[in-house]
Each structure stands twice: as structure tokens, then as C-alpha cells.
Amino acid sequence: MESHKDTKSLIEKAKILRNQEKYEEALEILDELYKNNPNSEEVKNNLIETLFNYGGYLNDVYTQGYEKAKQLFKRITELSSNNYRAHYNLGIAFFNLGHMENAKESFETALSINPNYKYCLYNLGLIYEEMESYEEALVYYEKALDIDPTFSYALTAHSQTRRKLDDLKRFKIN
Image (cartoon, rainbow, N blue to C red; front, side):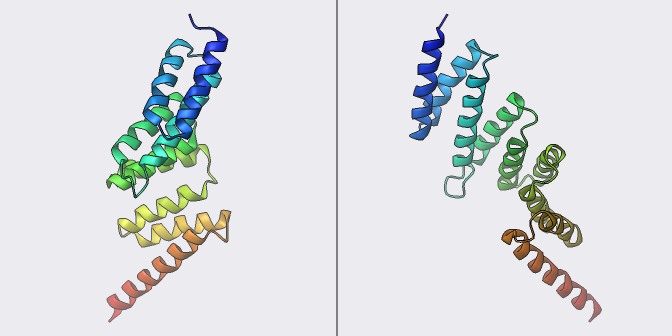
């Protein structure tokens, strides 16, 4: 049985590895600690933070480790089911993989936990736009803008989608 002091020093070692982007090594330490200390909030929080960091790193357009990112964010939702950021990031991974229904479901779960998460609303708009449901996309962009009227992504997307919709209507009339 490891002592509290040993646990602390292993957590610190994992943090150093995480900061060096040696995520696999950090997770190895934290997974073992969590297995031996499932009730330790400190261990659990460090495990979640490392999973977030690694998942975010993999979910980037330059890294494109979307499948692995999906697994990491799913794991966070298992450790902390009310973590809206984990559900949101899981949605991003699904979106990046082209799994729009799963992405939509993840974003909706995140919104059920935090209904004012503008990034989720914006990304739901993107999904509806991708599905060519422009009216529905506008609804989500508008909801995001209700929360933050200066949210530049939503402002741009709303304007472009409005233009597409106007063009489609004009084209159908002619």
C-alpha cells in the first residue's frame, strides 16, 4: 500500500510529464494511482486534466488523432458524467470524424448540463449547416449570439448561413 507522500510525489511526476506532453507516461502513473485510490478526488482530477490535455492535443487539426481523442473524452464522461466540457469535446472528436449524429448527441448532452455554453450552440449550428438545414443552423447561431452578442464565430456563421438561405430562396423563385 502506497503512502500519502508516495501518492503526492507520483501526482507531481505525472504533472511534470503532462507539462512535457508525455501524456502516455503521465496516464500510466495516474491510471495506476486511480486504480489504487478510486475515492481520491485529487487523483481523479489529475487524471481528468491529463485526459483533457491529451485529448485536446489529439483533437487538433495538425495532430488529427480524432479516434484516440474520442476514446479519451469518452473516458472522462465515464469518470465524470456531468462534465459538460468532456461531452462537448467528445462532440468535437465525433464531428472531426464525420459522425454528425454522435456529435449532435454529445453537444446536446453538454447543453443539458450547461444550457448557456455558446460553443456547443455554435457547433450544433455547424452540424445543421453541414446537413443543409440552414433554418435550424440559424436558430443555434442566434442562441449562441443571445448569450454573447460579440461571439465572432457565430456572427460570421450566422451571416454566411443567412446569405446561403437568401441565395437558395432567390434561386428557387427564378
